[in-house]
Length: 551
Image: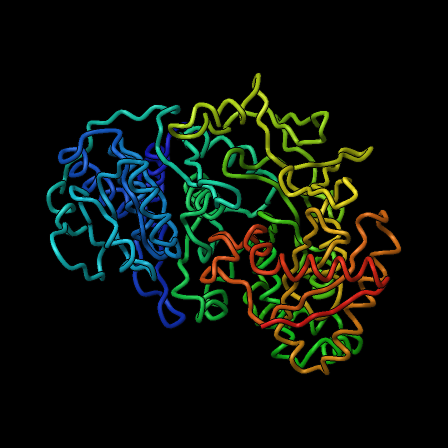
């Protein structure tokens, strides 16, 4: 069954499975509240009617909230009313939030709990209506969800949704330059999911787990909209502190995580077991039993598909999880074009993002940039016609990623077009493959290669938590050994001359990571660039590789 708008799917399941639970909030590892398809439909339509009556159509409405059922209910109400959802990260700095609110002329902000609310509240211009979702306290003039629900009780919105209607603006991470508002329609949300549905093999009515920000396109499509197409249940994580507990309750059929999340799972496993040596010993004694124990402990014993995407996944990490019987399958999509390629258990090459999904055309430009042509891509960037023209050229979407394609059609991302840099020799270096090679060591969990205009390249990194149990001299020796291995395999101009070990983790809070857990290279360069350049020069002069620890 294929429908062409989001409200059509909500109505369909409310009629076909009215008493089946769709949304479930978790608390203390158990169900705290739930909504059936019919309950959700009635609540969404009532609020949509109230929004339509108060604000009309095609107004931009921000959702700023932790993941919860009311995030999805508010999103569907905004869309059903003929308005546009602007998803905002709960970790967004006030300056960026102010840019988004002003740039979109936001009329409404739905607030449902966030760490950055105090800062965001201060930047809201006059005339913006704040709507408090249930269970949240808001000072000053505001509406509540309950008020809107009462205003629209028993009503249906007049809006007649069409596939190409604008329904959402999703802002890019802003790893380079000003964040861009990617326009999303019913079609650009539904077509990619319909295209990818057959690849996951999740069966009927699967359990889904929502823990990554719904403000990000991946969580929104892979959980919220995927559930609406496939009649799946969504379980909402209470907090990061209860992540494993909530996973154990849910036992999802599908789980998506960027590489940073899988690294954190890895460190949690090693921390509980007592380090890599202890894990290796346990696997040597009973690999099947130990793997089963770990999967059950994580709540992943029922999972049928684990997707890793959004950033390069180090092959060493994928091999590590393979030993536990957890198969990380790489895929590719971006805010502008989702469900471009995926790996499957039957067709998988570690390091590759898989092959294009059916009905997706790909090719490489003269500069080896990956270009995509497919139904369901974004129509462009909001109020940025010049950027839209750069993105879309004669039907081909420019992904901004450099790639190569092997003889069997497997795609390999080699780096971002804008991430490539020239060393002092004037030759280009692709940092991603070198970072992946460096990540094969046992002691680091984040790494970023610098070298723009340097005499040598310099690897900056953050140690994994498990490294604290080891002698720093042993850690240094292992990092140097890894660098020597890399330098034997890369071109002379790309050789690593130094390693900077940061004692401070890279986080969203200190703005080295984007809200989607990608490393901001310009932030790393700003923090460590001066030292990195000095070490690169010294390495070139002294023919020595340096390791420097910094606070």
